[in-house]
Amino acid sequence: MTVPAHGTTEVSLTLDPSKVPAGTTFSGHVVATDTATGTTVAHTGFALFKEAEMYDYTITLTGRDGKPLSGNVALHTADSSESTLIAVDGEKTLRLPPGRYTATAYVEVPGDTADSLGQALLISDETTLGDGHTSGTADLDATKVRKAYAVTERESEETQAVFNRQRTYANGTGVNWSTSWLLADMYDSLHLAPTKKVSDGSLRAFLHWRLREKVLDAATGTGRDIELTPQPGTAYRDGSSTLRTVYAGRGAAADYTGLDARGKAVIVDRSEDVTATERARTAADAGAPLLIVVNNTPGRLYQSYDGADGLTVASVRQGDGARPVSEAKSESGRLHVRQQQYPDYGYDLVQQFEDVVPDRSLAYRPDDGEPARVRTGVYAAPGTLGYGGRYFIPAWGPGLGGDAYEQWSRTTTEYVTGGTTAVGSWYEQHTGLGAADGYFERGETDSYTGGRQYDVAWFKPVQAARLGDTYVPYQTSTNTLNWNVAVWSGGDAGHVGAGGGTKQTTLYRGDAQLATFKAQSGRAYNLTAGSYRLVATGQRTTAAWTGSTSTRTTWSFDYKPLPAGTARADAPMRRC
Image (cartoon, rainbow, N blue to C red; front, side):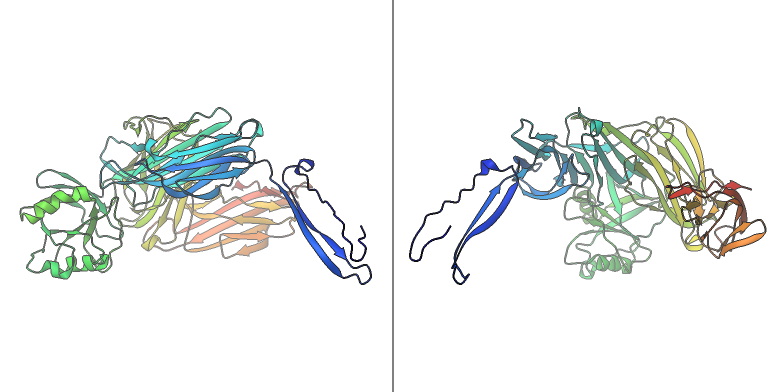
C-alpha cells in the first residue's frame, strides 16, 4: 500500500487464533518505507501465540502432620522413561499436554516414637489428561503412609532396605518407567503410601531387606534393652561383658574432671560444641572401652571417630538413651553388652508387590522355614578379611545396595527369600583385603527355592581359569577376537573370579602363536576360518591361599567369519 506525502491511511492487521492449530507461535512487524530513499520511517510489531493443547495438573504435597510440605516431586509420564523434577511448596499447578501422569516424592516423616525419623515414598494415582479429562491432581499425602518392615525369627538388625518399582503399559501404549530407593543410614524406618490397583499394564515392585545378627546387643542392669548403632570404623571386642556406666556430659575433657572412667562404659550427650573425634579421644584417654553417644536429633547417628584405636563407639537414639543416662548419673548403672563383629547368620528378604501397594499392614513376617537356607563358606586362611554382599537385581534394570566387611574361613547361615523370578534375581560378590587384596569372585542365582538348603562356597579349591558371566570371548565383523578370562575362579559352579598374581593369555592356530598378552585379556586381528586354541595361565603367592598357586586352562574353538549384517557374536569355546 502506498501512502501519499503528508497523507494518512488506515490499515487493519488481524491475527485470528481460530485459523491456526494449537501450539502455533509466530511474530513479525509491518514496515513503512520512504519510496524515494528506501529508509524505514515506521514499523509496528505483531505476534500470536496459541497455546498447545494443555491441561491443569495440580500437585499437592502434605506432611505426616497434615500440613503443607515443601519438597521435590518427580513427575513420570507414559511418554518417557525419564522423570522431571518439580519443586513444590505445598501445592503447584502445572500446564501439561495430553498424557498419563504419576507423581512421586521421597519425604522425611516422624517415626513411631518422638526420637524416630523415617523416610516415605509417596506415590500418586495415575491421572489421564485429555480425551475428555480437562484437569488432574496428584495427591501426595504422607498422612496415609504405612511403615514397611521385616520381622525375623532370630534377633537381627536391619542394615539395608531397598525399594524398586516398575510401571509397564499394555500393548505398547506407553514407555515403561521405574524408580528405585536405598534408605539412607540416618533413617530408622521406611514408609510407603498405598496405591490404586493398576488396570492397564502392570506394576511390579519389591522391598529388599538385608538383616544380620546384632553387632552390639545391650541391656541395662535393670533389664531394659538398648538398641545400639555401631559407628563406622569402630573397634570390636567379640564376646559378652558387664560394664559399670558413667555419665560424662558432652564428652569434652572438662566433663571427665573427677570422673573414673577406666574400664567403664561412658555415656555422653551429642553436642555440636564437641567434635566426634574429641569425644572419642577423650574417652579413650580416660581408659574407657566403650563410648555411647546419645543422639540429640531424631533418627540414627552415624559419625566417623578418629584417633580412638581400641575404643568401641556406638550411638543410641534419644529415647533409648534416657534410661542408661539416668542409671549412670545415679552411680549404680551397669550395661550388659554382647559384641559380634562378623555375624553367624543373616537375612536377605524380598517382599513383592503386584499391581498395587496395599492399604494394610506392610509387615513381612516369614518364619525361618519359609526362605531358602543358604550355608555360605569362604575358603581362605583363618583371619583373612574381605567385603561383599548379596544384591537383588530387578528384572527391569540395575540393582542398589552396598557391601559389608567380612571375615573369611568361616561358615554363615543366611535366610533368603525364594520364588522371586517375577521381579528379579540374586547377584553376589566377595572381594579380599590384606593378603587377599584385589582378588574377587562373583556369581548369579536366578532364584532360590523356599525351604530348601543350599551349600555355597566361595574361592573353593581348585581355583582355575573360567569363562562365564561377562567373561565371554567374542568376535566382531572385522574378524577380531576379544577375550577376558576370569583366571582365579573358585570350584563352585557359576562363580567367576580374578585378581592378583601374574597372568598370561595366548592364542594359537595349530602350533603357531598368533597373539600373547601378559594379562587376562587380549585380542587378535584378521582371523580366518579354522580351528584355534586359547590358553590362560596364572601364578601367585599369597598367604590367603596356600593352594591353587598356579593354573593353566585351554579352550578350543572353530572360528568362522560372521554373516553380513552381524556386528558381534560370542565365540563358541570348548574347554579342553
